[in-house]
Image (tube, rainbow, N blue to C red; front, side, top):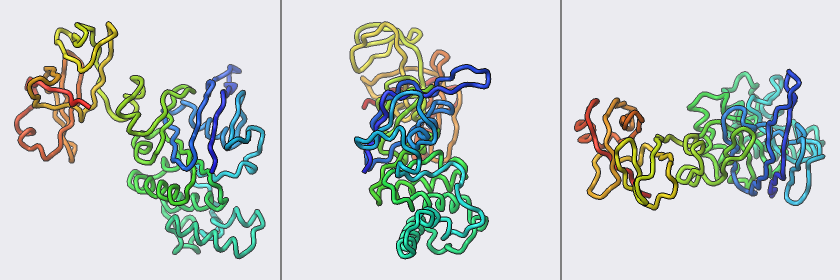
Length: 346
């Protein structure tokens, strides 16, 4: 199985004004085999550029790409033994499902028997084995994307690259296909590299997330690690929801937030710091000795499965989530009330 290694890789483009634009800046990255890895970040951060360099569709300005211990930087795309699923459906509109899925093996000159076995297996994997005679216009958007995946799998590559494969689908189909994609990758012991700007998609599908910003890698790790231990404000804000406010050191174990003294669970080393709080880490009925703040409820939103409380603390808005089952709590507080709240400790 391929272990993909990126070594000191940079990419510059020339803008329409003739200026150099740095899309990737000295990246070093190890993508493990048999794992589902996601390149995550806002539009323009360089994630698709990195994926296309890995595929060989564009060349790096400097640096290299290794598959296992082999340098593939100078190899053509067709020589890299990869499966590629594009954002927009890469299927032929005049061919039925069977011939679309068989296209790769057909042009490679495989035997009829091998082609038939491969197509049957791949269409069954993506749930299209009963639609072999259907033309693309007779399929739903989700089915067409699954057909594109079957075509990519036909290469029998152990490395699967996916460029925003779910962004063109509606939310319900996209959510369903997340789990289908992950199941196919895991059941076939593939290595997957998936580009997305959707943090929920990355959290649900990934073993490993590579978070990018402005051509650089900000943090890598499991979804749990990036959510629970972000190494920057950007990471905390991009992965999940988080409320932030500035604080000053008051003592070695407390901070001052606009006159409110907040006890901290560990020693404070910096004079000024930014505190981030996850909505689900806030408790509206604190117990004695817990870390507490006081604020005013500006807004209560009913979100179906939970209530969202927006609490104003000296001009900073802190969001708190409470499950619907906490009915007594939902009736206890109303907009305009002053409340004390605590943070759940890890």
